[in-house]
Image (cartoon, rainbow, N blue to C red; front, side, top):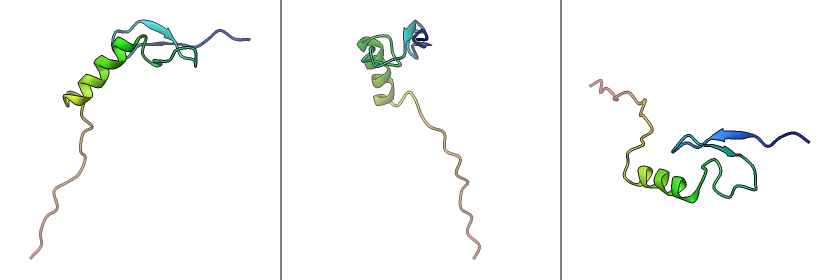
Length: 58
């Protein structure tokens, strides 16, 4: 059996196991998961808009 995959926690960078054994994956802990959620709730993370303004041809 292969070793469990390790990924860097998106919040703190700690290597953590990415498997069903880790209930907070891809985060290393509940704390890091909640920090990330707070960043989204405060709108610190945004998905950029690629829409061009619609021009009116009268």
